Length: 218
Ligand SMILES: C[S@@+](CC[C@H](N)C(=O)[O-])C[C@H]1O[C@@H](n2cnc3c(N)ncnc32)[C@H](O)[C@@H]1O
Image (cartoon, rainbow, N blue to C red):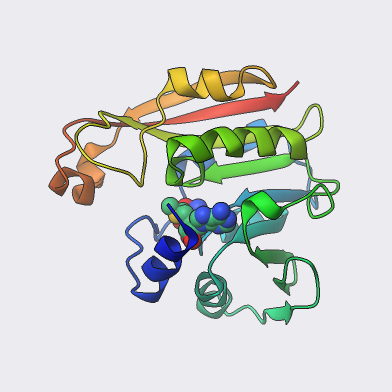
C-alpha cells in the first residue's frame, strides 16, 4: 500500500471505509481511555472520520494525522470548521479550535507531535496496512507512547485468502504478536458485521468479525 494508492482513493472519492456515524465501539468503550476533559486524543490515519467530531464533543482536543490533504480539507469544510493551515512546520497541519490534523506520514511522527498525549484511538489504521507495515506500525506506536498510555483499537478478522486488503484481516493472534511485548491487551468485544459490509461481501468475504481491544502501554 503505497502513498499514491491512498491519494488516488481520495482523489476519486473511493472511500468506502468512511462512515457517516461515529463508531458504536468508540461510544461504548470510550470511558476505558480514562481521558480527562481537555486532554488530547491522538487519531492516526484519521481520514475525515465522524469519530473526530464525536471525541471533540466529549470534550477532548483532537490531534490526528492523515496523508491526504484532500481528506483534511474535506473534514474541516464538511464540519463548518475554520481550518487554518500551517505549512512551515516539519509536518504541516490544519487547525481549528480543538482540532489539529497533521498532513503527512504516520511513520514520520515523533514524540514532539504527541507530546503530553496518553489517549489514542485507532479505527481503520492498523487494518489499512499490509503485514510488513503493521509490524512497523506497532513498533512506532510503542516508541511514541509513554507508560500507562491507553489505546482503543478496532480491528477486523476474516479469511484473508478470500480477498486482498485493505481492509486487511488482523486476527487476535496477530495482535498478540504485534503488541504483547510492549502493551497489556484486553479484548473488549467482538461482533459479526458482514451484513453491514456489502463491499466485502461482493469481494467474496463470507465471514467478517470486528473487534475492539484496549491496549495499555507497559
Ligand atoms: C482505511 S482509511 C481509515 C480512515 C479513518 N480512520 C476512518 O475510520 O474513516 C485509512 C486512511 O489512512 C490514510 N493513510 C494511509 N497510510 C497513511 C500513513 N502512512 N500516514 C498517514 N495516513 C495514512 C489514508 O489516506 C486513509 O485516509
